[in-house]
Image (cartoon, rainbow, N blue to C red):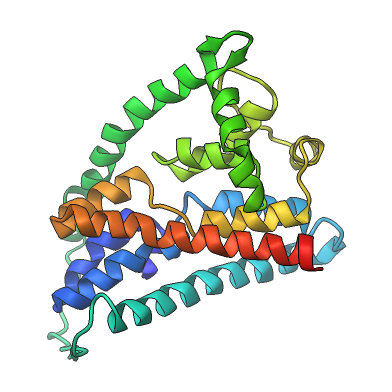
Length: 280
């Protein structure tokens, strides 16, 4: 789970240390509830824009506290879904784990670095490149291919808008998450590109300018919370999906790893949006 904070794909490969196949599978299926580095920029930016801008000198402390709360929410969902899976789809007797401490030896730094680079880093980067190249072509086509006076990006976002509104989002946000499957880092740039009707991805360096753009397109604090919740709980990135497929050797469990966090995120966003827009 801790490795997932850096990269969920690395977290999935890290599950190899678990001896029990059942518990290893549970860990793989719930790994995506832990926010990775690709999601932290989105979470931090939204927190800074909508929730801590009026706290003066306490902005950093408040942002850190709220981000910690989000992380704890992800950990709670990981433990909750692990418990539910162990009682339903993946029943079994919990295994014990004995940690044996080997004799102390001088660390072999060169060996550790080489093994990490070739066994982990290059493995993940290769899969990322395989996914990112075709994804870039798709994003360019959606933004530049016009049907009448509208781009495909606009047409698809309008189609998704009614369902996205139920979740407290809009069609642009939901489409950005879908297109951003290759890498969570590009979700916010895609949102900006769509709102500004641009045909290329770029970033705004000023958070105030970005906040004004989002507010002008209908964002409020409820939208911000729903975006953070869905960022925390949605399908794994494409690299992680490929890694899960390789580790489990099963399309069924790969699909389960896609569906479980997505369904949780959809229902939690719908519930949150319903409570704060209809009930209250």
